[in-house]
Image (cartoon, rainbow, N blue to C red; front, side):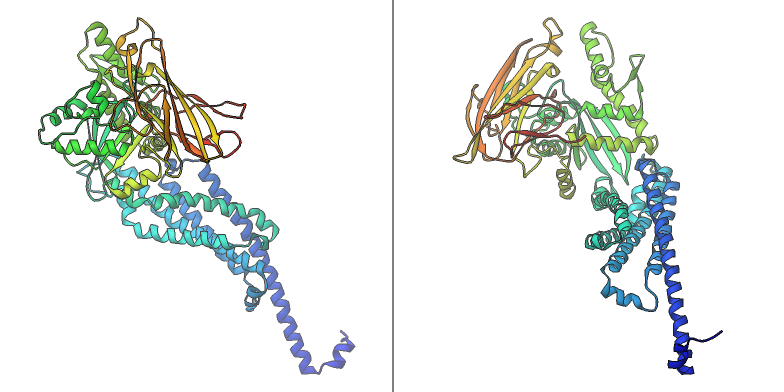
Amino acid sequence: MSQSPLFSKHLPSAARMRFLVVSVLILAVLVAGCGRVQTADDEYEQTLEQIDSIQEYLGEREIYELNPEDMAWLEREFATLAQRVERMEDASSLPLGLDRVAEFGSARYRSMMEMLEVAALLAESGQIIANIANESMTALDEQGFRFDPQDDGETWLEVIHRRDSEIDEALLIMDEALTRRDKIDESELPGRVQGNLYRIDQMIEDFGSQIELAQQREMAYEALGIDEQRRYLVLFQNPTELRPTGGFVGTITVLELHRGQISSYEFQDVYDISRAYSRVTSHEIEPPWAISEYVRPDKLQFQDANWWPNFPDSASMLIEMADASGWPELHGVAAVQPETFQDLIDVAGEIEVEVDGETRTITSDNLLEESERQRRVQRETGEGETGHKEVIELIGEVLIDQLSLGDRDDLIPAVLMMFDRLDQRDMQAYHEDENVQQFLEERNWAGLLEPQPDTPTLSTIFANVTGLKTSLAMQPTMDLYFEPDDEDDSVNVTATISLEHTGAAGGDPFYEGFQRYWIDVNLPENATLLDSSVDAVEDPDASSGGAYVVNLHVETTEEITIEFSMPITERLLLRRQPGLVTMYGGIEQSGCDEVVEYWGDRDIVLLLDGSCPEIEWIEE
């Protein structure tokens, strides 16, 4: 083979040899680089497929449907993902130290490596969490939700508590991933990488909700009794006799939790503790004006202590009265509306109870009817040994047994449904531990009179003070008319509250007869009451808009108009009272042709920052 004249002429033999060696090395580097590029490309495609596989797997299942085998699979997937990302990092590093040059010279290279680091961190944290979840779910399936003093095995909550430091480690890794993701310059990434970055962002979003829950675990340890038993008073409120927090308390239960399990529960007629409290002469609370005027003038009774619409006030009052009665220490209070029971029956399935030798099938559709049936029968015929409240106790006991003795495929969906009811205020909760209570308030689960501190609130609170079960026959509406006053940056508001008695003449007066309502109007902060069509009563505890009493006869409608002035605001919250038949109304503003109608079973936020009012609908 002939040599190139140029090669032979200009290079001595030794130099030619060095040139050949260098050329071979450069060629080897280029070949290796091409191999690395192909390896990185293959790993990249497989990583995308694996992320999609994990997200698809989780998207097809609710979290409570995941069993230990599922968590073990996820743990393996995250481990494989971590290895794959590590191989990508190795394959993406330039050979012979050239990556150090690229680090300063290529923003694209730095962005690529940073993205790989984010993926690696997420995979590492996911592996830790999946491993802990696997062990916790195994304990849950083995130990269940009911506390057994004879079983000293670890509960699901004890597993999480024991591995608490590892959760902290995973959270720190996640936090580092979030920080690094924020610093990635997406514009510097290759086009196809930019197009697939959403996969990483979706994984980060999925982790985000888990981070929020994990950060609250200290409160879960406290509330669920990791170290010692926690005792809660649960109020079953009857909206047929409407009260400020939702309804008259006829039945209660004391629920005890230990190590994340239900250790005991006991249903009682509220009058059992009421009689015990009545015998206490060293503790007396003056009843609110409406109770004293229309119910009983002596000291406040236990069944009437849910009078204060700001639920923490009522709950702390009940704990104080229970303590004075000699009850064991209570750590919190929950108020429950029938809608919550209906949801639980939907999850557990229809239940059967024995009442006076007859088997009754209870469904979510007939719960209210069946819970009142025994009282109706006794009123009509005078027959029946089992009392109305005993029927409610039977339903509650069977329901709790079915849920707590079942598997997590039932109980966890029930818990998630209760979260929804807390959002709607069909459940309200109070805890004596200030950290737990702060969490409840931040989630808007505490039944606060003003649930959003940064949003002015208008609320109308109704209470039936006849002692009759007529409230479901009362249909309220509230129309609002706004007239802005640009001269002093205020707005004049006219609120028209209408109460319609929908009961039929000739019906059972206990359910469809005369009604008397105490109505308390709580105006937005810094608002001024201007006028009212009905004189306010002399209630010393009335809110800023005054308290009023309205008498409703069958098939009649009564109306109250209240005028007030308030500072101009961009948002106004209309607070929903639990237990109230859904309130309807219309919103008008001077200069606007359209009347905005509102309705629903949760708080409504009016947007007043535009030319005409709008409603901020909350997606359910």
